[in-house]
Image 1: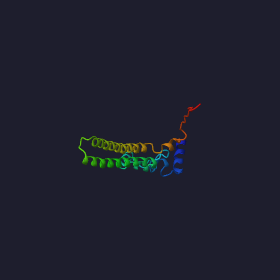
Image 2 (image 1 turned 180 degrees about the vertical axis):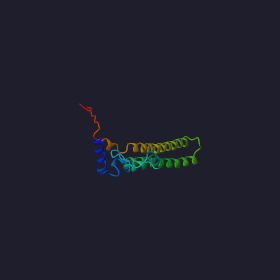
Image 3 (image 1 turned 90 degrees about the vertical axis):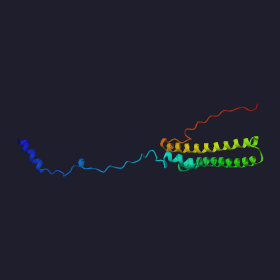
Image 4 (image 1 turned 120 degrees about the horizontal axis):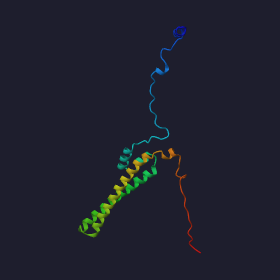
Length: 160
C-alpha cells in the first residue's frame, strides 16, 4: 500500500508537460529530388516533339549544341536538296516527255531526298528522347569519355 501511495503522491507532485513531443504533429517535408541524379529540363515526349519540329532543338536545350547543330544542318541540307531537285524536275518535265529517263531519274532523286529529310527528322527526335533519359549520365557515373576510351594501334610496313 505504501508503494501505491508514494506513486500517487509523486504523480501529483511531479509536473508533466501538456503535450509530449512524440504526440505533436509535424509538417511533412516536401520530397526533395535526388541530388545525385540531376533533373533534365525537358520531358522525353517534349524532347521528341521539339526535335521532330526543329531537328536539334532538344539537343541544344540539353547542352549538346554541336550534335543539335549537326541534326539541324543535315535536315536543312536535305530540304534544300528536295527543293533544288523539284526545280530541276519541273524544268525537265517542261522539256521532256514523262517517260524520259531524265524525268524518271529526277523523280527518284526527289523521293530519295524526301526520305532522307524524314529520316533526319525522326533520327533527331529519337536522339532527343534518348538524350533526356541519359541526361547527366557522366555526372552520375563519374566517368568521362576519355577515361573509358580504348586505343588500338598496329603498324603496317609499307616498304623494305
